[in-house]
Length: 389
Image (cartoon, rainbow, N blue to C red; front, side, top):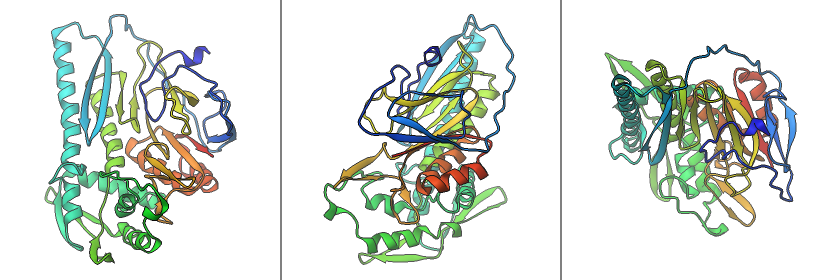
C-alpha cells in the first residue's frame, strides 16, 4: 500500500491516512468522475456505484528543485469560531526568509480577520449581522469582502438551480442547528410543517437580494418581503459561513503564490482546504472519511492532490437521530427540512473553494440521479466524489 503511506494529513471531514478495511454490516456506494487508477478504495463497506462521465484530467508540469534544506513552519488561528491551520515548507535559515514568512503570516491573519468582520455572526456589528437585523427592503453599506462573497453566493444560487441557498437561516435554526445548537430529543420537539413552509417561502426570496457598487462603496438591499410566524414578523436572514470559508481559502492561495511558497497546505475547519505541493513526494495523498463511522481513522477513498483546493459537505458533521431518522444541518431548499436524499457526503477537488463550498452543499440536496447529471454537465473541470447510503 505504498500509495497510502506518502503523507499523513490532519483532517476531520476526511481522515488520517493510516488504516483500512474496517468492516460493518452495511453496504454503501460512491460515485466519482475521477478516472479509475487515480484513486483507491479504503473500506470494504464501500463499493464503486459508477464512474461519472465528463471530467477531463490534466497533467501540469512541475520543475524539480533542491528542497534538501527546507523545513516546515505552522500557524493556527481561530476564525468564525473555527480552527484554521496552515503549514509552509521552505528555506527559513536566513533572517530575510524568516522575515518574509512573518510578513506572510501577518497577511494571512489579516485576511482571515477581515472575514470575521464581514460575515461572522459571532461579531456583533459584522456585515452579516447588520444585514440580518435590517428591515425588509432596507439597503445597508457593506465591506468589499461581503460584496464579493454575496455575488459568488448569488451566482451559485443560479448555477445550482437554487439548490444552494444561504437564506435557509430560519430553517437551520428551527432544527436546532446554527449558533445555539440545541438539538430536539424527540419528534414532538421538531418544528411543524406550517412553520417550516413559511421559513422556506422566505428563503426562496434570496434571488431578490440586490448588491451594488457606487464610488468605491458597496451596498446590499434586503428583499421587501416578510412572513408571520408565532406572532412575529420575520424578514430574510443569511448565513454565509460555509462559502465564506472557501472564499478565505481562495485568498490565502493567492498569498502563497505572492510570497513564492510552493509547498504546504491550509485547513479551514476541514470543510475547506488548500494543498500546494508536498515537499517530500510532490503529491499529498488525501483520504476521505467514512461518513458512517465515529472512527477518525476509517476512510473509504483516497486520491493524490497537488495545487488544488478541496471542499466537503456531509450529514455526519452536525446531526442527531430521532426515531431512526437522521437530521443534519444541511437543508433541502425544496422541502425546507434536513436533506433526506440518500447522499451522505460530497467532496469536490479543484476550482474555486468558495464555489466548491456552495456546490457540495447543493449536491447534497439533489439526490443521486440529479447530482450525476449536474456533475456531468457543469463540473467537467473538477473532480467530484459523493457517497450514498
